[in-house]
Image (cartoon, rainbow, N blue to C red; front, side):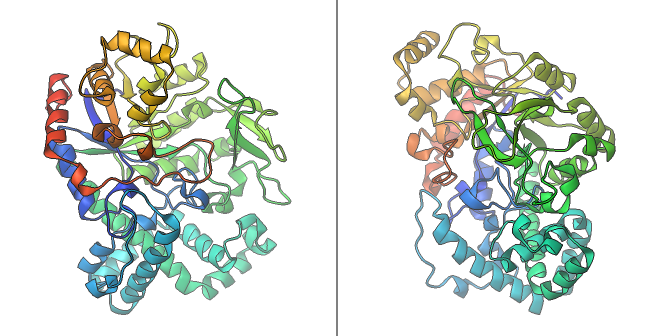
Length: 500
């Protein structure tokens, strides 16, 4: 569906300032919403909000529907009477500019376990009723997720396909026994989800009241080691004997990589999904629309055809394209949910068939200005080639910041940009690209906060193809200055993107 002319900011909640070493859903999150409102922005785009595993990537989560408990605000737990300020005595000092996950996780988990224990012992009647209602309404994914995580802890973190066969294959008697044996641990994981969604719901309500809509992110694939694959093996391409991925997701060799990218996620058994009227996907979209307003679909092209690599391959070279039933899927979702507020991440190898799928459902595609100046006038990322039903970014979470990109750009690319702009302004190349995005005909413009702040490569969020050192950047509270808000507000007004 086309969207009105508007703009917003890309920022993951883990990047908020916080005394606990990682951004959370507390006071600073509300301050950021106020900054968006004051700057005349109408969108806040986040990365996937799921519970992260190895590498801390929000694109490789233990569940496609659960929330990341590391984003729960301990200070809000004090407000609920589940922690006390004294619980924060002797809290260690964390870096303010990045997340040190190894240091953060044990500290945060200890606080969350204490809060869960206190909830069990002293929750009020209304709190217990709210918890029960939450568990009932989310049971279709929550029960499997909580049991999966409790079992994973009991198995010292081993991937589910390496558990005892009766647990890996979900034999009913084994699951009943595990539910009894691990009842406290299951409660703990349900409590974490209750708290995450309670805090997130309050924050989203505040944002919506302030005129801010939230753009969430659905990765097309889920992690192999996830509650989704463990609980629904029939809809994934798995080895029947071992449970390993029989066909792995990725992208083929291209200009950027001679061996392609091998992601390792299992691809879908689309024929089985279609027999089920895409029930799992409908549930996934419904779950997302419970807590975001708009959904960005990552790797959209995989819904038209996907690259599948056989088990045992170490690169993505020996794969093949397999068609996917994208039209049938999105038709089923629309019929059952009634709306498709979707943005399509249509970067990469895009064919006319992918474009036709995107356009059939009127999904806006993505334009990235950092990709615009390295080739010829036919480059689809140059603003004069845009259509209105599109969303333009200066860069994404996978790009360098605009300042970092410009510093590393080749002379040809810099010359093209210079000619296009009529010279780099005294405001800096980041504001030049922000102006270019806001002034384009694309209906939506999304700006990474790092570019609004004018930061370099040190603030980059992700280096694709590297397993460590990503997803760490955080800003400091004093960076959101009134003059920045004013500048962004005036440009947003000038280019017709202000709220009406």
